[in-house]
Image (cartoon, rainbow, N blue to C red; front, side, top):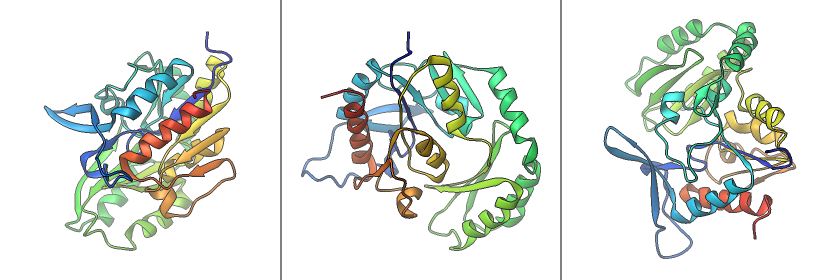
Length: 271
């Protein structure tokens, strides 16, 4: 039974877990933290959190409904080995898929597809990205699960106004643009993590909801929660974003991930 338990929904990359490039190991203490690898790809370690964060997250998961909420595709999400084992529910593709015991719920996906019918089609957005991003700063262009598109870019060569110009083109067409690390996402406005997390809350009866995230694609998730946190890095921090029940933290990198887990532990009854 999960009714009466709190629900914790968290973004993953650059919120709870970090690539080597995003770790930012400048810690308040002299010693760097011990890290736990939670993802490998093609035989290489890819993503980490601190061992302390891993221990605390296991305790959090013992007394809540824990919902990873990520922009990763289902395939990318399945590479992870999060502390506490597989989550019963997970949100992938920014809300496009609701995984239940590791498998996408087809009824949820059909509902999402219906909501996207009012937006400009993905093919048109992908074509615009190809036409507008002809510089040598583009490393890859991808379509994720037939739902949204993204670019992998060289941040040092990215033209300063390009993301803003893309957002100006996308907004009247019903799409949202987000810059996260080396990736620029173009996502349909109705494709949201908060809608999928609300569905988990409906099915489980879990309440209240706590959330964490670092990017503009997480803003709807944080606003829908009863309490929420974002780290001192990322789009939300850079934009000076705020909301009354959302706490912006000063910590950056993997230290922020540990602080977020500690805040979730305290909020869900930990001491």
